[in-house]
Image 1 (cartoon, rainbow, N blue to C red):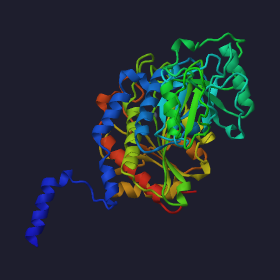
Image 2: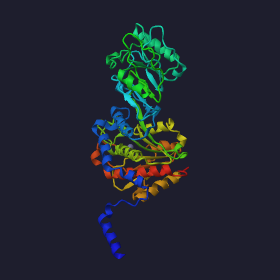
Image 3: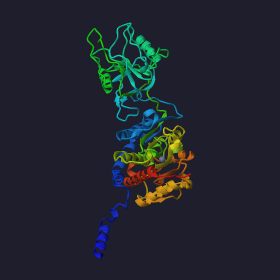
Image 4: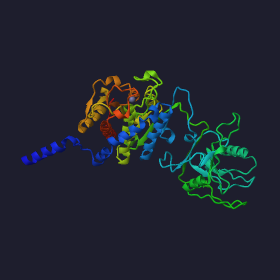
Length: 506
Ligand SMILES: [Zn+2]
């Protein structure tokens, strides 16, 4: 016995320091936990806090780039988009002069099997489709109806059946002399029948890509427009789209239309499209929202939120936001590229390891935090998930500095059960939670918006430092192992909260 104990003590002395604390979480949870690594956290921060991201200022190109980076990572995971109308983003207005950005980001055509299909195929603007010269600007989404696969003879236009109502109609250009005129006229006919948009099939059998130069961004102010969004498809796009719906595009024999061509609704095809001449507006903020669905038949209707802001202060154009030099690039590595990395890692751990949770888990990357909690306040005012079903919120901000195995914990007494869960997990995990001096921070990050709606929330924070909100908050100073530890803890907090039966506080 003694020898065994000695051996154990020797082993502990040799390996003890590096041995992880005792866990009794299920093996798949521990495996998912280990997938959250310092290396991956650091990779995210290295990108997000690089000069190319220009300090991720809200409504600026760098902020836009950061939103894209976060979205791309979420898209690769098996998560559902949780933003506006089936997208990953929730946009919100800012009080600043809007400028416009790339057209290919707003002119869209995508086809999947269902709404919000993460596997939907996106077609390329100006390559696979081009909006009609005088298309109406706007969006449409829904099922498709193939009205005719081939052009009809003048005067024998097919009747538009009631099934086309509420659908995106696929049809070739009707015959006639003035192309723009007949496009407009037929779009009006389709709109009258209740169609929401028109995808124009190429009439030439050998038609390839639509012509780029055929889409003018600037139209005369009084130019007559179509009544619907109208998109012209390349032959390849048309074939791919119809194939998804179990139909084929017949090759027309020169001069004579085929006697019988397919028509009807496309099966299991959901299309989303948008036409906009001005490109997106930079003067908007963007939250990024994704969803990991719960598995309990009842509790999955409820959700817990885990969030972190991804924006920072850019070139500190607003001198009130910097403690350093206004006009210099503020990369915000700790604030809050670190928390953003944490959210990405936690989302990945849940999704890649298919961790079943009773409740739904929502991951949020907030924009506009630095300008006054704009993104989180917008979300609680315009929730994309029923607010009354959100049971608690965990916020992380600045998790990569100061002592590696200690962190600050901002809590409110009235959310006792939530605090107990968090403190219990930290104890099991062997991390010290310091509540000291945190009262002053409770209204300074995104948990505040949730607390204001009386949703139990808490705040995980790595602590203050002298580079805070200066041009010196750079990736060289972050501690990857601290990010790993806190992100792992966040994963466990979220896991426990999502499975907790009972209340989280008043
Ligand atoms: Zn922050």
